[in-house]
Amino acid sequence: MAHPTPDDLALVALGEDPDAGTTAHVAECLACVAEVDALRHVVDVGRSLGPDDALVAPDPRVWRRVLAEVGGAPTLAQGGSTAGTTDATPDELAARRDRSRRGRRWRTAAVAAAAALVVGLGGGFLLRGVLTPGPSSDSAIQLNALPGWPGANGTAAVEDGPGGQRTLVVSMAMPAGTPVDGTFEVWVSDTKAEDMVPMGSMTGDSGRFPIPASMDLETHPVVDVSLEPPGDTDPHHSDVSVVRGRLRV
Image (cartoon, rainbow, N blue to C red; front, side, top):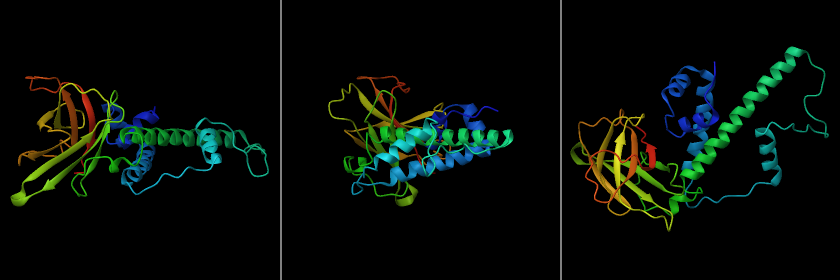
């Protein structure tokens, strides 16, 4: 049985659904479920950092070890000898190779998730300090940049108001100097982006959008901000998504 690629597992951990086959496989494969859960921990840690968190450069040996393990290069055991050179039966050697392949696959997926998170956060974990302040809410989620929009980022949250009225609060930021020709529009959709519901256009870099009582965010948990062309009269999505994230519902 072929497992999804590390990149696909990283996308699942980030809240995306690469394709129906990957989703179905992860739902049934205990090994992939475990890897996605571990990757989500990486993502959650990254998203939990705030403007007061400082990045500390690790010792160069740490990075060399990461590169060696991801690339499959042999690591040295204590004393300078290459690990794994002791006598072993063919079955034991095969088991070691299988464990090594699984380990490299997990590490590659972890690096992919971390890299995707950094790109989605606009190049660093100190993103929250440069975003327009958003609502203080446990439901706030990060909106990650789509391909073609490096450095774009945002947040989305659901605010509960009087009488059960809910409001979707969205803010975003673009890198300085990025040409923007059109209007940013906010959508919610299912995880396949097949049923996209328009919420409204943003004013500047933020917007507040009443959520209809009939809307089920459990079936439409994805927040998508698109770039619609100037003077657009087409009610459909432009197919140009800038940032996207999945609500915690």
